[in-house]
Image 1 (tube, rainbow, N blue to C red):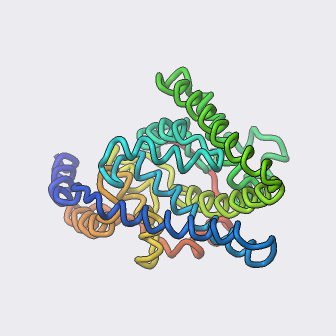
Image 2: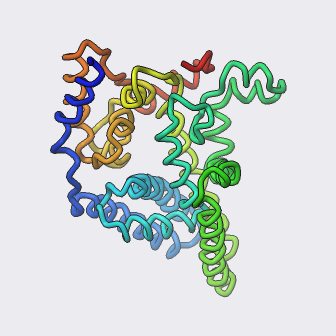
Length: 324
């Protein structure tokens, strides 16, 4: 009876927060897109030197936040326009070789399996059994996973992992093979156009350096975000909604960083209510905490900011002991 009551109270407390305002999502997307294009134009209009490098690195930072916008599009909460949330994320992802269609299918599995099914395609934390059965080299990797993933594997690591997981689940997810094909063809077409242009203008090395810098910067930001969202929180609770609240991490940060991250600093709130748009997640967090307190449940975790949490968690590697 308590679980039924808390579910009803949580739904009632957040009922008015599910409405999507397209202008808010478009503003975020448009501002980031404009800044990114301005930095790209600057980088390609100056000789290869310090200005080129700085502009390209900043473009990588902004591109990372544009890619995070595609997460909202996966849930169709950025604008609420179905056509926009289907077409635009692919146009953003394919230039960096990111298979968005495959990611979208895997992300649905992640929301269903987080904290309950070890096959979760976005699970970062290893189990104790996996660690004990691994080779000495892999065990070393697990102990240094954060540094290896963020700074070594980076964006390429995310791309390869997504494709491998897509292949792994292609029999389970009926639409996966179609998404794999669409992503591969789309990436080849986009890269074919870019390479034709740069080769015809004798700018191949400049383009390769540009892409490499973007991949490194994007990898650092997205790998850090991916690790922080659930690491060391794995576990099954009273029901699916509570599992999502307690097996996901919220982070304290400034309103600007929260805006850039699309509200994903309130990741537990997002997992409990994935159809709440990013701009309403802070308010949802406050309301949910009050409902949890009312029913005698622990408050959702609110960790220190991105840098502090990354430092602490990467310094204290942990394993999943058992599955509830």
